[in-house]
Image (cartoon, rainbow, N blue to C red):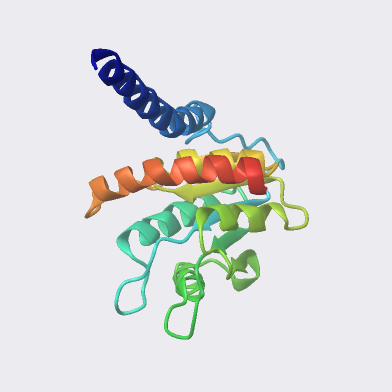
Length: 202
């Protein structure tokens, strides 16, 4: 009886270790991969980045960018004004007439002095993976600055690298955000999902 209980405990422990590894390995890989790639931009003379990519982050009830998205746009516009790239690429969810992240993002950029000809839009950025996938498929886009909050950058940069992009990250942590602990926990699972998605579906 004791042997059966011991074997059962070993089996349960083994399953727990395996499950923990399935989650831990992707997260560690993404954190290590992004080391030195966040907020360290190289812009020598005319060697600009092909675009500054802003990832969507939701809208307020009135259709304007959420706090997180507004901060991403502010950072992107600052980088644009500092000459890191001549193009801002806006990628988000345009799932219907009543929800259009990209148009709200574009309007914000226009209102803050970015010429319309310097704004590109990706209306099919329904997820981080799809935004980076779509960016990698664009012609003449190789060097990219990805703008999002720090907790999200690790996954975005990992996917970007696997898609063949030469990417660095710009953190857009300009304030505290509501429900951030929930986002951090959710991101652990999202990193795990996209780690394997890049392996099997890229």
